[in-house]
Amino acid sequence: MGKEIIMAENAGFCFGVKRAVDTTININNKDNKSNIYTFGPLVHNKDVTNFLKEKGINEVDTSTLDKLKKGDTVIIRSHGVSPNIMKLIEKTGANIVDATCPYVSAIHKKIKKYYELGYQIIIVGDENHPEVIGSNGYCNNSAIITKDGSNIKNLHNKICIVAQTTEKKANLDKVQDIVTKLCDNAVIFNTICNATKERQKSAEETAKIVDVMIVVGSKSSSNTTKLYEISKKNCENSIFVENSSEIPDWIFKNNNIKKIGITAGASTPDWIINEVIDKLLSFE
Ligand code: F3S
Image (cartoon, rainbow, N blue to C red; front, side, top):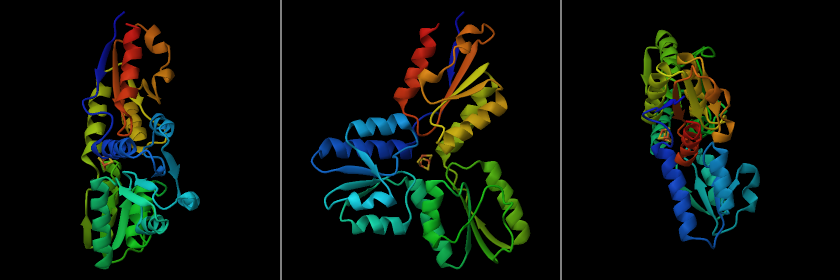
C-alpha cells in the first residue's frame, strides 16, 4: 500500500553549516598543495566528516596542534572557538579561515561587550557543547551555564543572558523568569537561531499530522536531538536515524502507517536526506 511522504518545510543544512562546508570544499578545490584541517569535526555528522577525510581534510584539536606547520590551513567551524584557542592556532603559523557562523559571532560580541561593562554573563545551553565553550571564552570563562536555571543562585546585580543558538525557547524563558525575580538589572538576548526555530516549528507541525516521523541526522548533533524530542512529543512513532541504512522494516510492513514525515537537523546534508527519501520510495 502506498505511503505518503511529507517533508518538513524547513529541514537539513542551515545557512551557517552550509557556509562552513562550502568554504572548506572551495579551499580544498583551490589549494591541494597545503594541508587543510578543520578544528574539531566540521559538523556533527559522520557522513560529512568521512567525506572530508576522503578528500584529505583531517581534524586537529587542542591536543594535536603541534602537528600544524606554517602554511597549513585550519578552518574554524560554525560553532566558533574562544579567543584563547584562536591565539593558540595563530601561534602555530597556520593560516586560519574563520567559518564561525555570523549568528554565533554576534553572541561573542554581546558577551564581550556586557562582560566588559561589568555584567555577569549567563549562557542558557549545554556546558559541554563546543559553541558554549567557545562563547564562554569571551567572558574569560566566567559565565554561569545553565539549562533550566536550577543552578542559579547568588546573582550579581547586573546580568546579561544569552542562549546557545540551538537551545529550546522554553529553557530560555525558564531562566529569564528565575533571573528577573532575583535581579532588577537583567538584559536578555534571545540568541536562538532562526534556523533552529524554523526547523523545530516545522518538525512539530509535521509530526502532528503523520503516523511515523523520521528524524535524520547525527545523534551527537544537539539540534537534531532536539528535533527528535519535539517529534516524539507530537508523534509517538518517531525514530532517529543517522542515514537510510537505519530505517527499520516495520515502517514498510505496517499497513496502518500511511503518512511518513521527515525532518533533518541543521548538520544533515541533502544527500543523506535524499537517500532516506529514495529508500522510502523504493518500497512504494
Ligand atoms: Fe548558524 Fe543557526 Fe546554523 S547559528 S550554524 S545558522 S543553526
